[in-house]
Length: 116
Image 1 (spheres, one colour):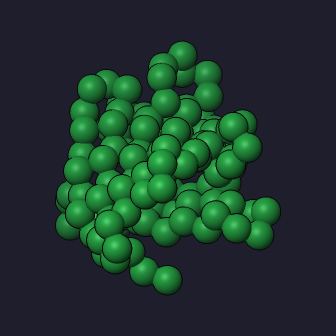
Image 2 (cartoon, rainbow, N blue to C red):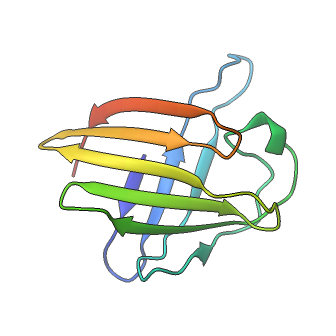
Image 3 (cartoon, rainbow, N blue to C red):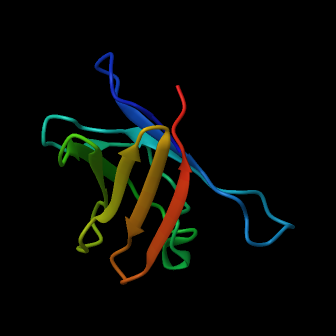
């Protein structure tokens, strides 16, 4: 995951590994609203959830600092009528933890290293 939160062009990129080695990994990317408003991305046909695979949609994303070391990203699938995915990033020096919560109740926790 990479985040750019400056220059008025705030955006994210998430690259995943494929569970099936015959397929390529998934890349999600789009703008992030930092003013309390969602920013719409480009139409996509894939997602982190299998239920959205192949279905055309537009995601919208916003991010807010929840304290000195915690950044919350909310990613909404427009027109689905579901709550947004929530990605909570917690920074501890050079360490970063990501807790991703999905509307269908799944959670994923990843520990990583923050880079420049």
